[in-house]
Image 1 (spheres, one colour):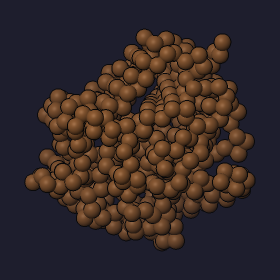
Image 2: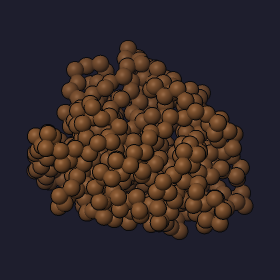
Image 3: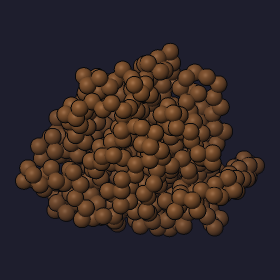
Length: 478
């Protein structure tokens, strides 16, 4: 009998690092994620490779940077992944929820897909009906969406925060969690090892918890980062343009006020955090279902997100920037059977989100491609010698939202972060030791010229090495 572990890969959409109680954020109610932290291994300095959904996910599930995959924005064609290799090795591969492939229904190596995508779909397959749409139709319901929210008197002031008013089991995150447990509970236990990807649409906006979850946060004291005028003034033109764009156009039902009130910000954060707690409860239900169906004992459970959300920090809405609120995500790996001697360990060294990919392949007995750009974190999970990355990188191309620059790249070390705008004289540079909140842009500071040049040199060398090392991949993957 195949003894390889089941791999349960849970991915949320747009979840910040500071949303899990056990990681030092006591205002959060996340008992099930806290269990994964206390019994598993957590990477506390994990950064995404792209500042929006599809580019990051394509990078994660191929092991290559966005500039290598050519998937630089949402709705760029994404049809291949290492999941195909996992399936060919003998795993039963199932997807429930969001993957953000394009087209949405691309098989991607899965034997079965139960696709649930964004709550609103405007720039991609707008008329695509996913499993959630079909379930709503079967109940005679129409999902809450932008056209309806726009009719509300408080729409422009709500910062995307609206209560879920339909039956609670029809909320997208509850629906995805329930569908995952339905699959586990009703399908005969598979003989082969299971690779199960569960993609929650939340806490991506609209921030739409059910009333009972919102009630738990709306009167709670929640830490909010100060918005400083000096920070706004020091941002490069593309980011100033992004603020104006998100004020004028309501992406994902969020209208960004250029000067939001503390009350507006608190309500947005309360609803966002409530969405996270809804997902946390679904994670608990999934763990219970795995256990009662005989999967859990020989399983590796991985929890992460594809990027974060500024939530008006630095004056910005959602992603498309390189602040820590966007690039830094939780990455928790739970498996008492395989990594029980590392229980509760927190690893502070830098890693990239896609570094979990080759670790998954190795756990599945699949050899990663020789030119893969991701670097396995499996030695760290096993408590073996592991070298953290000296630098991590994140990319974002011009799209229909980030309209004022062609290409933006971040390079981050343990001590500094630089954000480069292709072909432009401006940028961002932060001393993360002295300024962890990234308020003081040192790009034009004479005293920081040497570290700025060092990071620019590193960025150039990284891109050249990447282009050479992956020269055969692009042609072979088309």
